[in-house]
Length: 249
View 1 (tube, rainbow, N blue to C red):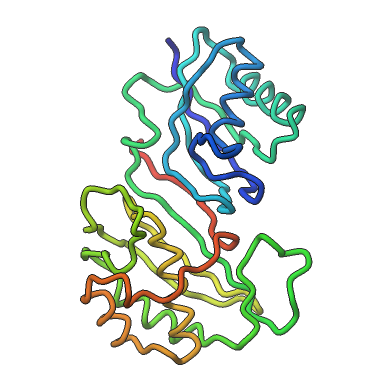
View 2: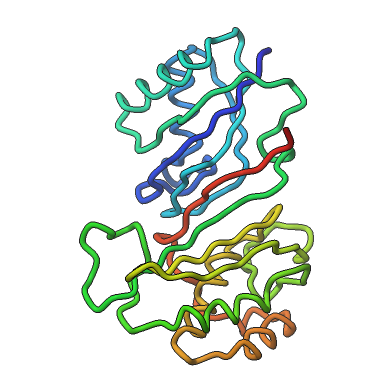
């Protein structure tokens, strides 16, 4: 069966998350529904990462095994037509034929995420559900300094959801940068893999550093405590974006 790798973007606001669930409509089920409408076959897709309800993606990667070969552009366009007809807020950006050894999840070398904070007194209108609104001024340089204490290989139990199903809390964080462009504070994170709620936990803790309520030393103490109670409030999902996945070749 020919295998296709696809890059997809979605607005996660109205979905229960990436993974197919019984309690609501997911991004996975939206894509599998489009494939069913197009091919007449029940196709199970695999994604590079799971995102929670309200989390968005600009570069989620999936793979699907189909019963026949498709011209890549025709597959992309046909799936987008079916997604549009169903009223889904999901788009297939590209489709590429790959070998059977490719796996969207297990072949991934690095995953890149962005967390966006709009830091201004005025409430959000156009950016509602697209960012975390923080009205009080944030010191992004203090946030960045604190973030550097988290880079590297660590036990991230402090920043791990109680519902996380990963076998180990140890991860290697390649990048955690905080920058500002006008009213927008951006937190960019890169690693091979992340724990459940890890980036939103980082964002909530770094926001406290930006408020002056935590120092870089406090953040390091929280990390070394390996205890969830030392984590700041988990940031809302609205500001989180799954940006890109790196693969070999």
